[in-house]
Image: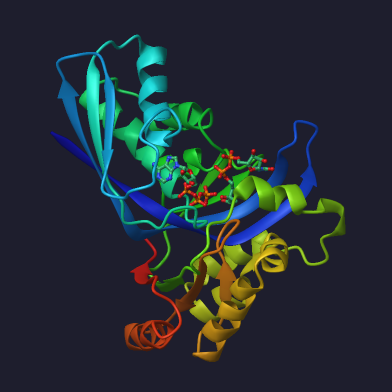
Length: 282
Ligand SMILES: C[C@](O)(CO)[C@H](O)COP(=O)(O)OP(=O)(O)OC[C@H]1O[C@@H](n2ccc(N)nc2=O)[C@H](O)[C@@H]1O
Ligand SMILES: Nc1ncnc2c1ncn2[C@@H]1O[C@H](COP(=O)(O)OP(=O)(O)OP(=O)(O)O)[C@@H](O)[C@H]1O
């Protein structure tokens, strides 16, 4: 049996440049993985089936699951007829803006590449991953990177110091397509400074990184779910230097310099939310 971890991601910046003729949005985002991860186990089967099991209920285990799509794509592309059982131990909150499904798909591509001894590079896996979803290529590499295009063009950045991250997820699920669908790309007033964030990351200074956080999807999700904005205000009130919504939301995060302070913020948040996580850049 082979295992693979699937890390959650946060968007330190998320900028939309314009809407494209193909319906997707041209983005520029600074992405970072954190050490909150799903655990996947791969076991070969004697038949030719793709079988999924998952610890979390309500997640589809058929073609709708991105893990199924990744396994199917690998078999089709490389003419593999072997069956596979993939067990997903879910720890990343679902429909949260943390790329849980995308990261599971990326881990499946990496895991099957090893299991079936295909010898593919990460760059080759990222090209396959883009066929499944815009966030999948970044999840193939993990770490710190700038994503451009519809999110699939990845420029990897040097790894940064393992900053503490407080995550809090309001009890709602947000559809990424809905949020992009409501965005008016030509009416965005404040674009985050991507280059500034890349520079701030090189200093490792949490204050400077926090000051540069920005996500143009925040206002769209806040308008749909005002409780997300209220929770962001709570996070700031509890002493976070900066806070931001990740991806299309609704998860919010704050970067914190010292562990003790991060623990204090988590404890304060637990009075308001059942889903609070303490993790680090990974
Ligand atoms: C919000 C982010 O998670 C930030 O990292 C990503 O931009 C979205 O990545 P994702 O969930 O992997 O997105 P996909 O599964 O490729 O697309 C879901 C839907 O989001 C919209 N979408 C996605 C990416 C993009 N650059 N422009 C878009 O308009 C499209 O309506 C698409 O149908
Ligand atoms: N392996 C998977 N894990 C979780 N959800 C999955 C998976 N495969 C498909 N899905 C479906 O995808 C939907 C979105 O889940 P996911 O957790 O990937 O969202 P997300 O974290 O908001 O992603 P992103 O940040 O890329 O927009 C869920 O409603 C779920 O039914």
